[in-house]
Amino acid sequence: MATMPEQRPIGVFGGTFDPIHHGHLRLAQEALENLDLAQVRWIPAGRPPHRAEPRATPQQRLQMVRLAVQDNPAFAVDGAEVASADPSYTVLTLERLRRECGPAQPLVLLTGADAFAGLPTWHRWQDILALAHVAVVYRPGFSIDPAALPGELAREFQARRCSPRELQAAPAGGIATFPMTPLAIAATQIRQLLAAGRSPRYLLPEAVIAYIQAQQLYLSTPSN
Ligand code: ATP
Image (tube, rainbow, N blue to C red; front, top):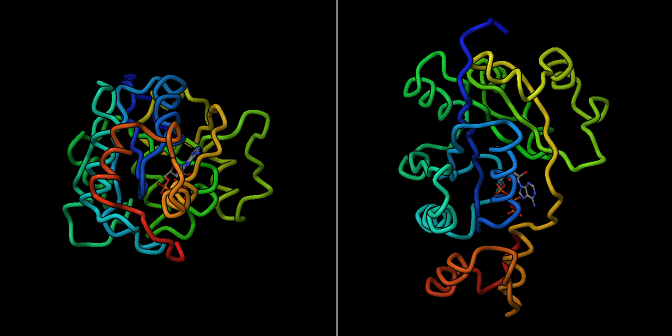
């Protein structure tokens, strides 16, 4: 990585957020502190190319993210993927952010260990590593094992591995890991609870639960 004047990185956190929950919120908060980020930019996917169509509409998922993060001044919501009719490719979002933020600003893509292991299936994944750093969250006590990653990703991981501190010294290209409080909350579980008429209380913010009820979301059980 080239040496440049240090700048606090901007975290980029994409996902379907169907719905957003406290696992996502803790990941962003712990990334903010562990990686000394200036901000976390939440980017709900509009039409995610990798997975089944989300249950809530893009606008509903964007609104739930807005409600969940509105009282945190270090969190910002970016609705560009939701507003676009095109498939939500992370590489295109990072190209846009790079244009917006300039060539020197460190950008850090935040991923769960599961999402990181699937990186080689993402559109133009090698370009992602040229546009941003990647930070991978792991469960304390379980560091990320390169032997468990696909070969081409394991090689990138070994070559680009750096400390959270080093993410400030370059705009892109590093891969750092950081631990977070384990919270076994999944959006799938929340949708299943709601479909079964059970309460998801304390798994996600009250304001988001109120919105889900007002919009009558997740009342039935489809396959996803
Ligand atoms: P689903 O259950 O619908 O698959 P999900 O929460 O896993 O939902 P996304 O909303 O797309 O899916 O997740 C966005 C990101 O948040 C991913 O990188 C994922 O790894 C991470 N993530 C989701 N839940 C947790 C959690 N409980 N702890 C840490 N990271 C999480």
